[in-house]
Each structure stands twice: as C-alpha cells, then as structure tokens.
Image: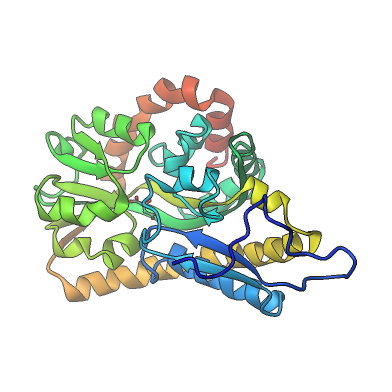
Length: 329
Ligand code: LMR
C-alpha cells in the first residue's frame, strides 16, 4: 500500500545541506474524512498541487480522502504516532486535545462567513494553532467549510423545542453535546463516515452539518427536513506531525508554508460558493423540505443557547469567549 518512500522524522533527511535546495523526492501523506468535492477535499488537492509545482515535483503530498486511511476518531492519534504526516480534522474534534478549541463550537459563535475570517485570522486563530504544540502537532492553518444546518426525519426544526426527544449524530465534542442537552435531545458522537448508515438504519433521527457535507454524502436522500439555521461553525485545523515538520529543511518549510497560505486564501471564497451551489443542487435533486430560520425564529435559538456561554466559560476560558464575542460588536 505504501509503495512510495515515506519519511518519518527519524529517517535520514532527504535534504543535502551542501547544496542549495531539494534533490530527493519527499512524500507526505495527508488523510481526511470528507469527499473530494467539498471545501476540505478541494483544498487538500489544491495544497498538494501547489506544493508539487513550487518544488518542481520534488515534494509530493498524497491525499487520502473519505476516511480511507483513518476515520475522524482515529486520525489525531495516527498523526501523533507518525502514521500519517498531515490531517485536517474539524476543530470540534480538537477539544479533546485542548478545551480552548471548544470556543469555535459555541452556538452561533460566528454570525456569518466574514466573521469566521475575522475571528481566525488574528490572535485567536493563532493561539488555537499554538495550543497543539504541546501535543506533538504543528498547527499550520485554518480552513473553513462554513456554517452548520440541521437535518432530521422527525418534524421540521423551527423552534428549539422541536428538537426535544430526537436523537442526533454529532462530532466528538462535549460543547456540541451540551447544546443537545439544552434542547432535551439525545446526541451520539460517532464518526463522520458512519453517519449515512446511522441515518439510514434510523438509529439517529438527524444530524448537523454544512450543506457541502450533506450534499456530498447524500444525507439529503435520507432526511425529510433541512433547516437553514447556520447555528454552528464547521472548519478545520490543518496539522502536521511536529517531528516531521521539525525535520524538514528551511526550503521545504518555506514551500509548505507558502502553499498552505495560498490554499487557505482560496479555500475561503471557494467554500462559500460551494455551499451555495450545492444547496441549489439539493433543491433540484430531492424532495427534502427546506426551512430557513427567520430573524425572529433565530432569536428564540439565541435565547435558548445563551446560558451555555456562561456554563462552559470555566472550561473554554473566559477571556477567549470575551475576545471572540467582542468581534461581533
Ligand atoms: C463531521 O464529522 O460531521 C465533519 O467534521 C466532517 C468534516 O470533516 O467535515
């Protein structure tokens, strides 16, 4: 399976200090769990393409999509153990590494796409990436997907009370679980790629995700209702194994950094367009009932979720919550 040479930190460096530049093939593996036609899938492919071009084909990034190497539940430890070089888990899954990441899971933390960029570009985004350092990981960038929506097979979700008694598949995040607790709903933390079967078998009534994930994994074929609620953020931290990063030459680091920066810039515009286009495709290709929350309906959700900010402040960090809320003003 790994027929190519795979450099781990302890291997001989593929870099000759006597000569400027790179002279031997370097291969990095990049594992992620979503489909290729999604904001993350396309960003990973773009990153690989840019790195290859900038290094004249010397550095290759082999991308494994759809959880074909590791599921979202396995990928973080696989990265820490050096079984894969790069991953891009949703930030929700990093709360188990450092609870500060939970700030991005707070309900309605970002009112729109511009606020996401504002929040992650500055010191907040940087300090979150830095927090991975102690766990053997080099946080390289934030990529976005967008805002999450609800889907369900029970009645339409309009008011927070509509969710009571339903069971939802959620990501591995205590902050997300707390939200379902506040809605008197059950939530189960299962892997992304088990979601289709969970919905199909009726083990869960619904799930929450961005349009691009609902579209590319065809959840809309299994669900009766979709609520455009924009109630939560879904984005990714692109992370490299810290030892692998540390073992690279200055030239390789420069190429990787430049490529990731260009990709991140591109990903932002691309994610917004993709979610918009795919919502139109869902409308055209399915009978799912779509409801977009009105401002008044959204207000009821904000009120229901308001106490969560205070109750989770001790674990996430009061200052962080204060700083991120200030961005909205
Ligand atoms: C999910 O688990 O629902 C998402 O995080 C999947 C992803 O990586 O977008």
